[in-house]
Length: 452
Ligand SMILES: *Cc1c(COP(=O)(O)O)cnc(C)c1O
Image 1 (tube, rainbow, N blue to C red):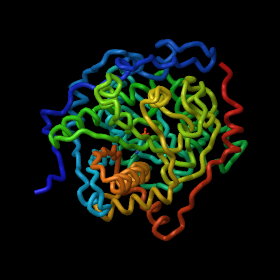
Image 2 (tube, helix red, strand yellow):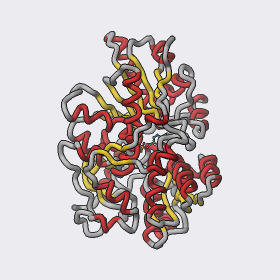
Image 3 (cartoon, rainbow, N blue to C red):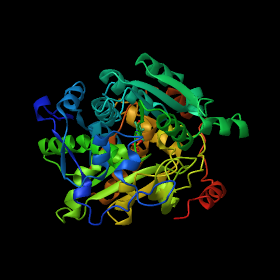
Image 4 (cartoon, rainbow, N blue to C red):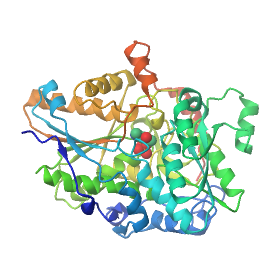
């Protein structure tokens, strides 16, 4: 019998997150204060985040214990299953062995609750009553809405206007979990009002929604801000995914030759590959390939500048060193809403600079073609973001077919696409378009980067 699923017992769920900062060959460039442009101290972040998360942001401790209360909520959906994609392998007629770690079985349908739950917990611990955040496609807003309601914290979500209009179901999901969700730009903040005055029909951007959520949080004492990706502590919380996968791959008697995942801000993929990259850094697995996939329409790592830039659109968030398309860049409205951020997690960028990970960009029609192929072999309707993984996985598996190599490929499958059926509909009816990389827009946005 072919074993297609690897289950980990709840008692074997990892009890610690893995902190890559303990093992980086060179430390990360420090984040800078948006006003003074000097290195940021922990005190600069206290209006935004609880101390528990601030300390994780800068920690160089290798293992950080997951609090019991967080583990208890994790156990409502974890450990998640590692699958072997036999049917896809057969359809491709490839000798490659394809595994995927599937995060779509969380209550919110993606990997995002792994950090949402932890963030709600640390805020609650420090007496915070209300949180704000931004959301693009709505996955982050819904994950945090669930995390907040389970720990009794109020939540306001600024949702990128284009997604708010295109994806009403995610707003309803957030409201069902008790959150207040408004389209961004909104009239509720100065950042939002300024934009609406200039451009009443502005489709919004993640960067602008971040500005609104940050402004809301810093202007109220009872409120903190939360970010669903990019930051070190977010990537840290996601490492539960890769730590589980390591145990499951051992059950399968397999070790990956290639790990593939999509990057929007970098959290889901980092959560999978960081627990493996330490084997590459310490020289045990020098040939391990780690491939990050991004959309051609928002190609921050493959075409962006490696430079200090603001994390948000108006320059309120910390300045970090990253690959960036410019903080004023508003990407075209592609369907993979979770991959439309102008920058990238500093940890991912740093590892790419050090030559430890690769990046490729792909077009959305090819991405959905891969998603449909996966649905018709493995059954799962994949979110548009992880469909990017599937496109590159299929390419690599077909290379194996040509060369006859039986490589082991591990996919970081970050979630289902049940709220993205309009995108599948567009693809299936031949209406999906590929967007060219808007070089001119990027040049304009990059010209406005902070001078540090
Ligand atoms: C948000 C999201 C992403 C992109 O964000 P990362 O921080 O890069 O992981 C990818 N996949 C899914 C399913 C998402 O919800």
